Structures are given as structure tokens and as C-alpha cells.
Length: 90
Image 1 (cartoon, rainbow, N blue to C red):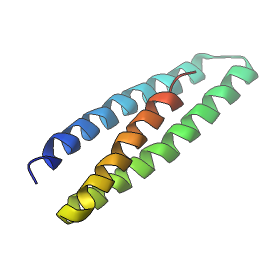
Image 2 (image 1 turned 120 degrees about the horizontal axis):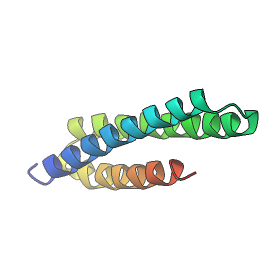
Image 3 (image 1 turned 45 degrees about the vertical axis):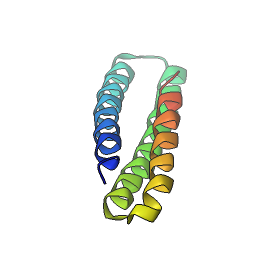
């Protein structure tokens, strides 16, 4: 179980970073007047929110998983974090 705690901490820290970035994107959208940029930001925000929800589900699953399932859940979390990084690259 000791191997899980660093993964959880890392994932939770990344979620906070992504939340900060999402807030920044939403503020940028509010300032942006062009419709095409607003649409692009809307798509990025929607994609991010979908991926964040999947990551949060994986975190909950990991917290309740037995040792046998932990490695699978850790891989899902790592993949979800990578996808969130990619989703925020505009």
C-alpha cells in the first residue's frame, strides 16, 4: 500500500494544477472576443472536464482497490494524467 500513496499524491497535485489551468482557460475565453477562439477553448474545457472525471474515478477506484488491482489502477491514473496534459495543449 505504500506504493499507492505517492501515486495518489502526485495525481491529486496534478488535478490541482489542471484545475488552475482550466480556470485560466475560462478567464481567457471570457476576455476573448472572437467566436472561433471561444469555440476552441470550449472544446478544450469540455475535453479536460471529461478526462478529469475519468481520472477522479480512477483515483477513487485505486483507493478502494485491493493490491491485485492497484497496478492496473495506477497505470490508468498515469495514462489519464498524460491525457490531461495533452488536452490542455492548445
